[in-house]
Every structure is written in C-alpha cells, then in structure tokens.
Length: 251
Image (tube, rainbow, N blue to C red; front, side, top):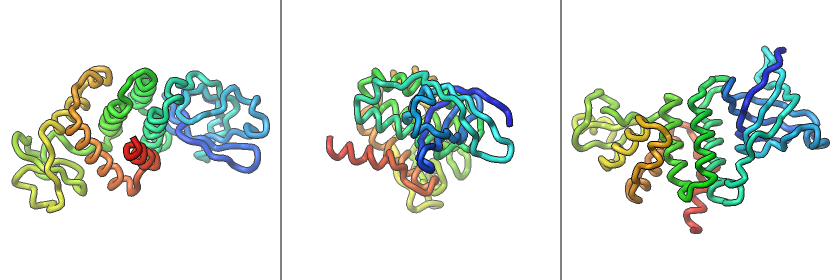
C-alpha cells in the first residue's frame, strides 16, 4: 500500500457497521475513489472533518493495489461551502452536481478540468442568485469534458453541419438534420437558440458562460433535453433531480 494525499469533494457517504463510514470522493489528483473511515462515528474528533456532502477536504489515505476501497487515515476540511447550506435550492443543486460526477465518472479516471469546474461552480453557487443557471452550465460543461455529451455541433447520423431545422434524438444522442430525421421518429424539435446556447457554453470558459443571457424558454428546453438525455443513457433518474423537480412544483 502507498500513502497518498488528495484534495477531494465528498460525493456521498454511507454508514458501515456501527462505527465507520464509506465515502465516495472526487479528487484533483486521482479522480473518483472510495475510502473507508474507521471509527469516525464512535469518535468524531478522530478526523478534522465530518465529511458533509459536497465539502472539500484534504484526504490522506492508504491506496490499496488490489482493492477499490482505500483506507482513509486523515481528513481535514478545506471548505464547507456554508453559503450553500443555508439555502435549500442551492444545497440540492450542489448535491445534484456531486451525484452527476459520481454517476458519469469512472473510478480513478483523473480529470483536473472537472475538479476545477466543480470548485468554480460551488464557489459561484455560494453567492449567485441564480443557482439553476449555474447547475445548467455545470451540466453542459461536465458532459462535454467527460466525453459523455450529446452531439450538438453536427448531425449525429451523417455528420453534416446543420444550418436550418434540426431535431434532437434521445436514443441516438444528438441532433438530426432534415435528411436523417426519419431515423428516429421519436426525435423532437429543438430551438436554434437552445443549440447555440449549448455550443457557446461548451466552447467558452465557465466565467464567460455565466454572463450568457438565457431566456426562460431556452432554459426550460435545455433542462428537459439534458435531463432526459441523462436519464436515458444512465438508465435512471438522479435522486437529486427528483428533489429539484419537487422544489419547482412547490415554488
């Protein structure tokens, strides 16, 4: 076993036995990994962090070569993002970001750009009045950075650039040009503004994307298409997305 240190977000955690927990982390140095924290429930002062979801921690762990579960010996809190935790919508959006990372990233697949995106998104979420817009930008950018993205820059079937009418195919994972629309009768029409918004966010920095105007109609269509794409290709609806849907109904 080697001893390693990493800056890592807590994606989730669960109790194991009477005294310990297993946490899923996403780190700058190693990507996603699982860690066992022995005795943290019976002796909370053993660790300098209580490992709240979406908190940023410095984690020291023994990395096992023949197991995906590593032994965490120390966890020190670097940022708890308290400005998010005082607002239920922001907290659920932050939870959605962590669940999305956990769902699409493979264990120990290092991607510093995704770590940097998560950090920037959480810091912006603390002070920004529009958490839903931040989450939409995060969604588009992480799908692009992970290679899991839907195809918006040309026809997913024939690869032709689309300058006019287009439809979005959920099953094929991208746009269809007029000649290829018959390949998926269930494909749906999509606004040109929605396509332009996705491409702008994919091609520009997180900060530049924050200043992009996004009218309610475009925002609604983006969320419908991206959430349907995720549910279809992950084979499930994210739990945090169901919570967000309930929040929208009660607002």
